[in-house]
Image (cartoon, rainbow, N blue to C red; front, side, top):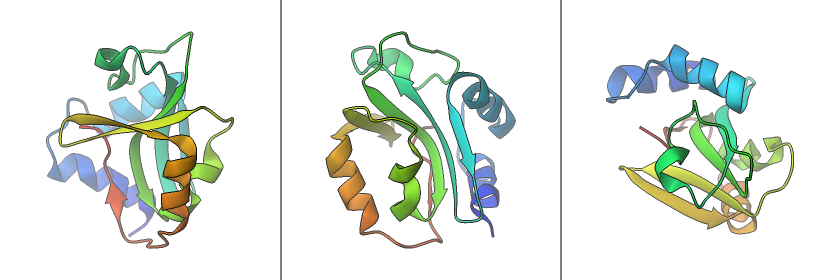
Length: 124
């Protein structure tokens, strides 16, 4: 199964606020979508001070200090190389808890993970 197919499958197996297609379009409009044979990512720049709005992919921010990773699958060791410019933090939501990490700390952990058969649905 490709990383894209793994990402689509998340919406079939977990309760989600919107459809995969709706979230994909929102990230194409307000963020970034990366799809390669090795990985799939939906992410966007956000303001860590506006936490109640971070998980809504329809909201864009003027001031940003965090890459919010909404959905990721595939080779995690390659994720951080796809952020187009540096920001101090990375966030994602797991089990309805928004988590923040320093970008360098997050990237360091990901480079040690080389598995390609995991899907990370980081926001529900």
